[in-house]
Image (cartoon, rainbow, N blue to C red; front, side, top):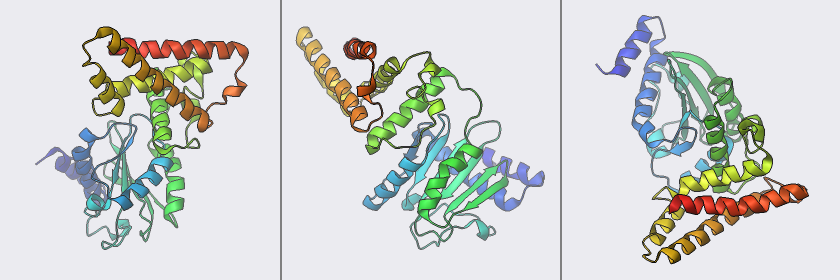
Amino acid sequence: MDQISRKVNQWIDSGKDPRSAHWQGGLEAMLDLFSPHVEPGKLTPVGPLEEADIHVFKLALAAVDLSPNLIAAFLPPSIAGAVIPPESAKELLRIDEKEPSYKIIVARPGKELRIVCAEISDKATKPGADIFEAGALLGTYDFPSQEVCLSELTKLIQAHAWEKGTWSQETYERYTFNWFERSMDLSRGDLLVEQSHSFFHSPTLIKSNRVDALFHLIHGILAKRFNDPKDPLGLAAASIKTTTDHTLCSKKLEELAGQAVLQFLNHIRQLELMKFEELSNAENEQFKKETSRTILKVVDALT
């Protein structure tokens, strides 16, 4: 008997409803399969997306704000259609089996895993979410439409799954990086963000000011992307580093880093994430220095 089956039996033996216990066990088994491919704090598709699926994923990506250690999987119809409650738990069935199902599963790690399972398909008879912990159904939320379901989902996740209390600096950083990457991916400046948890919006979280926080954000994202061999920036840097002429190589890396920093600054300006015209004279001088310093820091890390 595997670990999840033992847990389900323990929950039932302790008096939990067998229907919710088995359903949570099934969701945990799915998460065990997906977790190695999901980055905590990010909503991640766990299967190939068809063209119609991409639209729904972008809606979900824009709507769902996650604390940094939550596991969150987006299930397209090819996978979500097979993730259904036990026959005995028809009340948990939210969509007809013939319709395309889109599910989001969010899990908060801990002594007892808390799971939010949401059906967000516009074809669902009952769009909404169910919350489980230790084999028990803690709550059920039904919404009249996909639009309302998505608009309420972050509130639901924050109430039932978000990490409470004071976070570490590293956790605040990851939350801010994740928000900014979503903003870049969707080209939107109006995404939900808890400003009290974002060092970009609240620089005191990292004992900083808004200009330093801006470039700390840019450097952190660029460092990650340049070190990712699958990212276009990582690929470009790897190609440049094959140049045998050291001087030429450094020059090309500096040009690449400069273009990347300016691209990020333009993104921030276009989406009005920061109003540069409101910077003081002293902040403008600091801005110029940090632009050059950030480019050099990126290049130094690459050479």
